[in-house]
Image 1 (tube, rainbow, N blue to C red):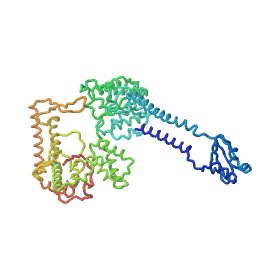
Image 2 (image 1 turned 90 degrees about the vertical axis):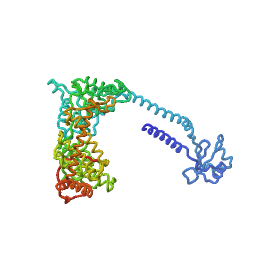
Image 3 (image 1 turned 90 degrees about the horizontal axis):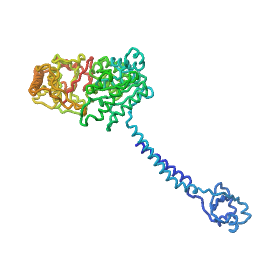
Image 4 (image 1 turned 60 degrees about the vertical axis):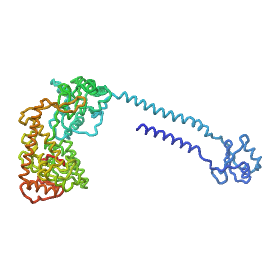
Length: 634
């Protein structure tokens, strides 16, 4: 597209030049043409001051004029001094006239050949441009197998410079990578001790935990050429291109002597090898084989390090993970509360924060958030403050942005009917009441029937502390809470609605995990079923049943027991505390949102409404709590 535009501009300029030439040299005749007889009369009348003869053209200058006032023509053979006396001109008066003879300038003498040469020049320029593009395309064909890696560090450019100090949290990961960078800067120190420099570092973690950000920090700190490429840029349709690009990538790194090669999303080419539809010689497998061979060919003294990132390490080929290739595997976990506060401080730089801002409170309310999520929270808070025409970002914007990142924006156009609003209120009130009545659950943070994202209503929980291990009793309490909305609808209206579909799906999946994966059923501590995957597609297609049909029936029976017991627990609590259920639902219908303080007052039986600062879900909390989201779809 750019080349076509460039050619069009060239041709347009050529035509403009031609037009300019014709404008300059081919001007319309404006001077009056008179016959020689009239010229003779005017000479006799002493009107003529000067005559200039150019070939057969006669320019006539009158007294008082600086330019020719008229033109005339003479015969080609006859001289003007002979023609005028023959027309009756008085010789004395003719002697008073200045006659100047000039050679005629034949403009058309060189414009005529140009009129033939110009089309030839145009065609020549056109074919020159075509051949130049064809030559460029041929060169691109030769470059087709070269790696298109971006070069950072010495000899390259890194617009966004990131240091390890600017990466929040991840203390152990940063320490490991600082050591790797030191390997490249001071290799002799380690080689003298007999230590071998690692060939590969694999960064593993969930999306948004900072894998690519750490790679940028390596590029800024190592002060060696840093070749960055995505694994998806290596593979092409044509077999062998991926392997050629891997060879080209390592050749570029070897020319730099010391270098870091970073391959992002390495699972695109590093999946477990196996026989797929195209056989064992498909493009991805050849690319992986070439990568393995190149990593084996790296000498311990060469100073070349391969870094890679993936969020699916379980799909990588074992040959890629063995020592000698990716010697170090660094796991990046989700940040804890202290790391979240540090990350928020980093993303709050350059933003006009209010003096009473409390990032610690925001960190407490965002368990399970990744670094990318926290960056989004800070950005959404800035956007909200700008929309409200404020000059500073207040705590209110940060707290509201948490819900926006988790659930999406408020759907103000999604207006529920009076009946739907009542169903939603009892549904969410049931979730909150059962959750608050069971000791193994987490405190309720907020209840709302304001639609956000895909959720017509939601209940937020506040975990007392961040935990990675859960007990069976906690799972059972969670199942009862999930089924509480369904039970509250049936208890109040005598029938079920589609609002509980998402809750039933979650509860059923959790019950099946308790039986098949966690070994928490009477069937014993046995894991049932194995996940199956096709290598050429790289995704799970189903589950391989490593148990009999008899055991499958027992599994279904135990799953049903878990569901029935959870339903019975929720129903029993709702019946026992129905007045509180009615009061919570009534308050939701009136206000649409209930905060933690007001909800705890209702649970204690106090019907006086809590002091409200703002309505419609904008009541500001007075305490610091952690946040855990349980979305309830309606």
